[in-house]
Image (tube, rainbow, N blue to C red; front, side):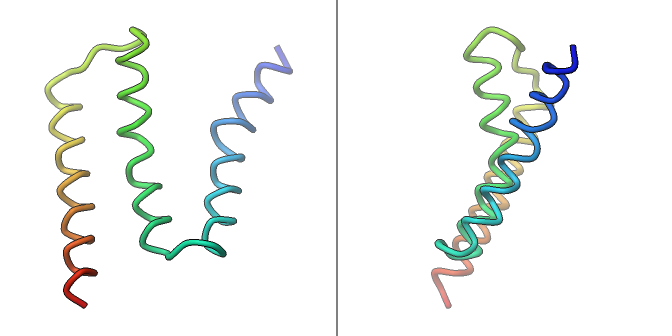
Length: 80
């Protein structure tokens, strides 16, 4: 039980945040922030693809909102 708890704390929480901070040294902050916003969308997509969850209308709506927000940010950087 302790190993499972540590795994849940370290692998999906601490490790991605550590890698996100490391990525700021290599890529632009825009790329790093887009990755952090798309993480929940990818997680839901994988859960649905693996049959662990079902796609609901509200989840799909919020995924579209996230993609629209990322698209607006990308368009603003292309103009500058």
